[in-house]
Image 1: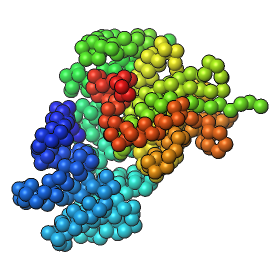
Image 2 (image 1 turned 90 degrees about the horizontal axis):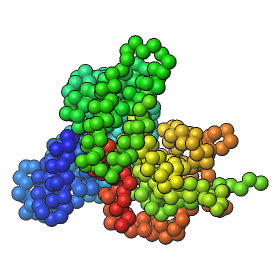
Image 3 (image 1 turned 90 degrees about the vertical axis):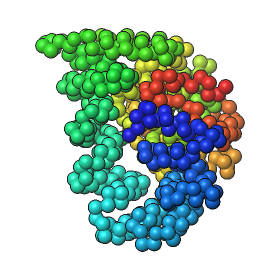
Image 4 (image 1 turned 180 degrees about the horizontal axis):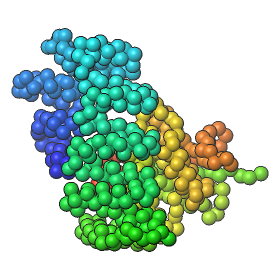
Length: 300
Length: 204
């Protein structure tokens, strides 16, 4: 997960390198640190370093990390020859290495040789059954072959052991959402919020899922989580502000004709609306009219 | 005999959606089609523009509801409505119309019963540079009488055509210049409202 400042920094560096301003190694390190997927750029700029003997030797022992990074990026871009070459170099330097063995497995995956990849991973797991990366490769393989229920099963088994793996919970939640299994997705986000209560992304995703599930109770809870998202993001999250407006509107629709025991205070919605209008006026004034009529259509 | 409906998509609407799919190669993407029934020929639906919507969590309601409100508001003032939906699957090998696409399609049909569902044809897109094909790299689905989405096969006259015959040539050109980097979808807008989902400068 990447914050806005981190993303801006990354994009700035990327632009710089793209336009010949240098800083390729810095960029590649940042991509590794933030764990983002920018395979085409990594391949391009990584190769430019690896193919230049002077630049390569300047890296010292980090050279091997770069080979690994470029190999994975190459596989992501289906440049399997490049990947094979990088892996060969690493095999020569680190024979019998489990880490290189993982790359070999990934190359089999990239080729679509699923059975062989599974064999390779199984044997690696025999020696080290708690290798998280390989366990997750199995989930990825199931997903890549379109076996979504298999991927879910695998991922659930994985999470029974490695329940602190937040990325895995997020992946599972997103798979559930794509299958419209919202209750199960909600459970995943609940786990994430419990373990990392100050990460606004989880509050926002949870609210979105609850709103999608619908029903008065879910909508009221969704509204609370949009509110906590706003709290955690200093009021700057457009999605959460819009979420408040959507919830208020939907709750009002459902409460029509009911006893207004918990009368919703309209302050939260008008505060959200005001914040949105102010932001649009400042940064997207051509869309302000659309926002205003959208908000108007949401008020009962 | 009832004449069959034909769908005519403008070059810009077509290219915008393919570019969005190319920008987000690792996830599913979707968009809406804007247009109207041809005022001179009620058997033709003109798809005049498109708005790329999301590249993450396509099945969540809040962003979709906001997007549809704003899109309809903007295009309504031009006399255009939502006439269909575009979807591109996450995986290259997946040529199936998924449940999310069908559900959104059903929703659009409530307001425009002749709505078209366009599914990106990954294999056709890949082959585009080798085969000089003028037909769109999309599959057309429409609802039959029992409200099931059916693939419309292009045998005989094609029912989905691009208005400008050289559109695929332009698309190939954009692909080689990596034009997809300039496309902004509604997801981008929600993350940063400065990004304009109307993409007014994309084809300038």
